[in-house]
Image: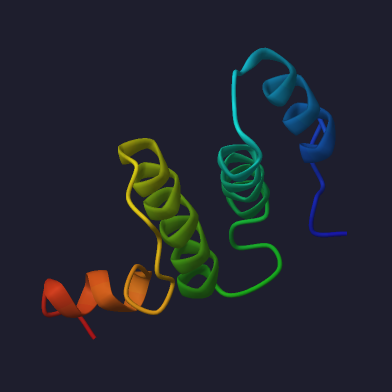
Length: 86
């Protein structure tokens, strides 16, 4: 019920993925970014959803740069800590 859009996110995700040259991990990140953006404020609280979006966007960027991802240090908590945000 938290996906009450004219176009269902899964349909949009299928359309986007069909047009992009992605590896499996990049595709998974983009899928989850779309998923969490499309339900922002409708399922979980906004901070939790935004944190998930930030994690997947960070991991997508690191994958594109060829960086080995460590989710224990590459995550929204560490980004916020770096900027002095609790």
